[in-house]
Image (cartoon, rainbow, N blue to C red; front, side):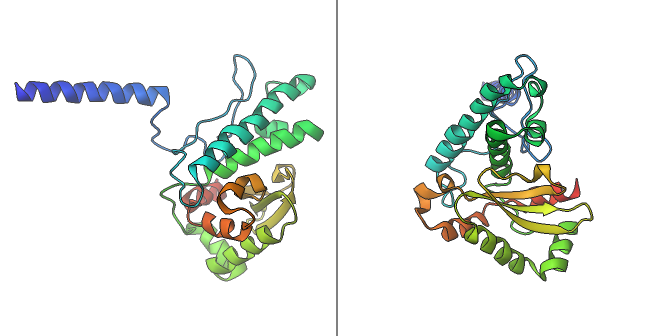
Length: 238
């Protein structure tokens, strides 16, 4: 009877696994990697909040589960809800994907759409099993411009720490393949420019205050432990 019981259990486990995969509870890869940004629901033309590609507590100790829950589940959701409310006032953008809305909007709609896009892009670059160094073409370009990865980290960190008030720090790829580090205030998004975003870091206090209070520099230092450079590599090569 033991082999029969084991076979039944294995069969049942496979059935449960299939159901979970189809339901979206198990991911074989990050479902919101670059260029797979939030799309609109075809049935009601609304932007939807994607699920996180990891559990809320998996970025600890660098970002706490409480911060992830509030930052992703409250702040980001609030931006998306605002986009869905404001978009009805601009009929030519209703039904468009989030990236298009960011590129073609102004004012309150832009601020909320940009913040929504920024946050999804930001959280997508993290992993509890992160690759800590760039590789391939991106590594070569970083070494060419900054000498080595440590020099690049210092330059990026300095830009983040010196940005006044709230905003974002971006690593972008220019059309000629060169890289730039750019600081943007408030909802600043680089999609309207000529560069391609590779990495964005949130400098708003809501991103770190529960965990680090006013110690922004300590927060930035911690992020290097969870930024997954395999994702940034892929963004550079696409």
